Amino acid sequence: MIITVASGKGGTGKTAVATSLSLLIPHSVYMDTDVEEPNGHLLLHPQISEIEECLFPVPSIDENICTFCGLCAKHCAFHALTILKEQKKVMYFPELCRNCGTCSYVCPVKGALKEVPKQKGVIRKGKVFFKENEIDFIDGIMNIGEPSPTPIIRKLKKLIDKNRITIVDAPPGTACPVIESIEMADFVILVTEPTPFGINDLKLAIEVVKHLKKDFGVIINKDRGETVQEFSSLPILLKIPFKRQFAYLYSQGKVLIEDKEGEELFLSLKKRLGI
Image (cartoon, rainbow, N blue to C red; front, side, top):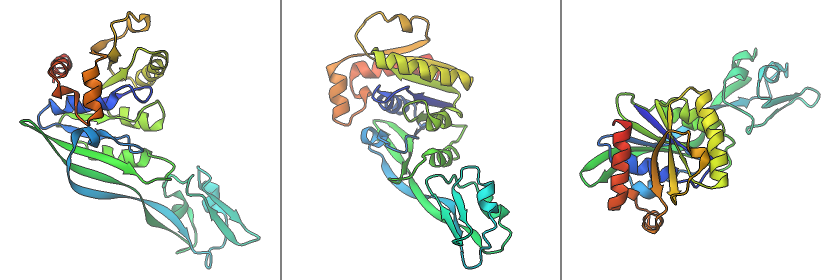
């Protein structure tokens, strides 16, 4: 079973929810797909045992044998290549490249255009030990300056064992990386807060989840007990109270279930989810 924890905006407590829930499920997998800024490790303190390079093919052009026919640029759907025939030069824009391999496939001159590996980030694997429980930890870290996190997220997805319960800590927002993280889920937890920004961005996240035809539930973090009309028709899984102790634990790099009330809250969530 794959449960993706997402949110329409950052700062709602998505990682706090994902980490605490994963620790209450023995032998589960916690996967952080927010590869631009992963922070699950700050709360889980994993023992990293393996670091794998994320390598992707990028074009390398030998202008000494290139005929500058322009087929590579013509067939590149992302306009990552431009041919300057008069100057006999090929311009490559790595920010636009999506590593699809089309350019090398259509090149008619053997050896003129070949693909070489480029590292765009790393994937880390390890273990987390909490009380009597042990879980697997996986996250990705994208290199600074890389234009798109989606290829690394796709590599992370290939590591998912569908026979195990995996808690996916998705990136914030509603852009492509979030869709990539939700697309594989059996169930989606949307974490929000009772603020104007939180409610607005929750609506956007719900639209994405419904478009992907995923079952979902909502967790309201920093709940003060107010009646919020926008929440009345939503499937509310849990309300996490606005409590100083929870903020203190988070600031110390600790999970919410280290507090007795926090543990009871997430045990009730686990029961509600049927896991």
